[in-house]
Length: 506
Image 1 (tube, one colour):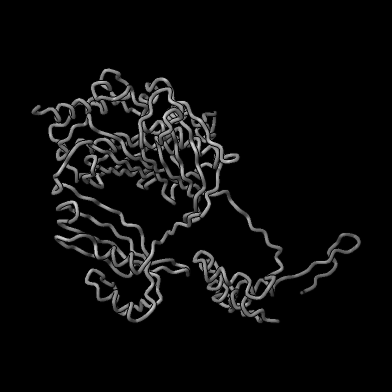
Image 2 (image 1 turned 90 degrees about the vertical axis):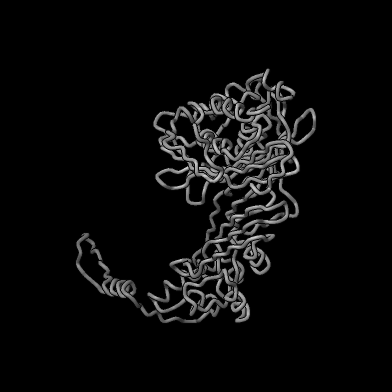
């Protein structure tokens, strides 16, 4: 039927957003902006109550600064995530739309969103590709507070059906940070021979330096197996454990046509390794008593979540339209299921620690209907950069099929190491960890640089060599200040009548 897709698009635009559809639809390559979302204590409390989030951070009390649950991000970024689906190049039937995955991540330098924040959201389409079951669209959104990203959102949507227009497909990737350490002059020469590697200073010796590649790539498809164009650009930084940290030493600039991938990333995967490496356990650790599962019951109505999330998709609230779309009934919002499951995991793993739950990514693998019972199992399966990796699986109690799979990253409980203050217990204590851990090496090197500059000795020399005596030379401005302080020390004696009757130097 001619124009049907456009009429469906117009209908959904009026359902999801305020106002009439625009005269000119945006492009899939545009950046979408939603500004001035005001986070209020009432909106946080209403959302938390709806999804039954029991965190104290989201409870409303007089004089308390409230923090929003991670899932509140869908309220903030809803329009920014959905508007890219109305791009003019996407001539598809919105009635075939399926929400496949969703993700939230709090950046390392950010805190959870709080009441009183004024937020701006920017979104863009990261990828449009063709899968066996339909056309896949990936959208990414960044939420800003005072020009700083405080939350990252991502979703994948599938338009069911058969598609063949590969010439319109593309993928934009923020590549995983990779590190490379050339161990010989030959390895340095090979790196320098790459036309895409452009040093800022060619006289810099790269041998035994840890180089970190921060890159992004764009792939424009020609067919399922080949690309029309590939671009990989970014910067290379040299990692340093000394004060001052890393600094840029090169750029990467690669462009190619009619190829099968990015030689830059192929080279780094062969000769380098990810900066953040996963350490997966051989045996997962249950996080509930005796590994027991937990049961959630979905509400019998979707109206409350539709109201707090602004997702009034008719398949969730209109029985007649869900029948028209050949669905078995009203479908519980996938994001509601995600919020209930994630909140349960949070309650059992870090309920008392605000901001410990750093990320959650899940895929929706089957439909959930109002009133369904869902069985939830979650396990500690590994570590990543000091954070726990927790796997999550939710199954339909009646059908036995998995309806959601997810993975969370959670900051562990704080640990304190107490020492007696009597020095090393044995010669070389801690040096094995120094050679194995970059974090430990950074602490030792920082201390060495400080003491060497100011006092003329290195802590690691004492630990490694266990000297019987050590002469300390107070060097530098701070060292001279401490030396002067030692020299100016005095001792006062108090006589029987509590009068100062003597003054002695020590």
